[in-house]
Image 1 (cartoon, rainbow, N blue to C red):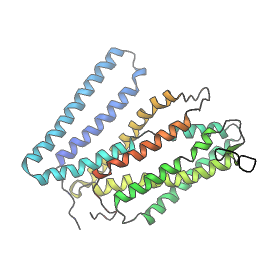
Image 2 (image 1 turned 120 degrees about the horizontal axis):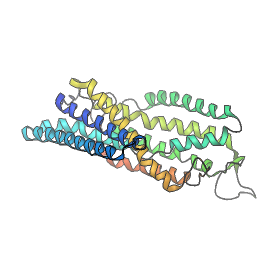
Image 3 (image 1 turned 90 degrees about the vertical axis):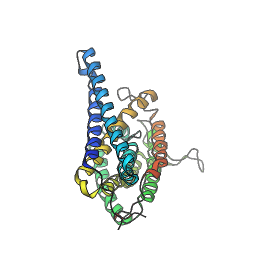
Length: 297
């Protein structure tokens, strides 16, 4: 067994503080419209940015101090920083999940409220099956290989939503393919297609979500495992929050509007999210190639 890197508690605390401050900064930005005094809002924003900057300086200083003493100390620090960076970026990519959720609600709720609820139950059941399959298939696999395969699979499965997103709200079926075959265009019932896509995309989406928590577990130093694991989970949540901030202007630029039922840019959003998700794999070299059992290879 390879010895886990032992990192000073001081460094972990600095990292935890940086994550908390970023979360507070995002929350403060989100409540701008609720603050009556706009000048006060800007003043607090500048103060938060200054505190975040000071925290980052403290974090960098801790790294430099360790690097000045021993090369091994720097390696221990980087063994915590690199997974944290990867997990943040991996979860901060644009996401079309919220828009797809709202679109399917708009498609089926007015006809039959139960249909939309059945879709959500199908998604929940698929997630449970996905986690069980992940444990049986990906156990003791190299973490880089797991991220590569699961991310590519989830990205391809997510493209199945495109034909449904191109269907009009009044259409009864989803067109399959780009042109007519044998005199007619292949078509599938809209709700049947949504159920099948929910199963496939949900299954592989779960596969792509699980490796993040596995990496967080395996990257936590044993001497501060609890607090380090909590920091990693916070980083995952921070990345998900940043994903919303990144997705919002994209949705606005594409002209997706819930109030006017304008969903013309949904398929483009799905493509953008797919390419972003695959592009993050370029950062995989930052991750130590661990097995789920905790052995480095």
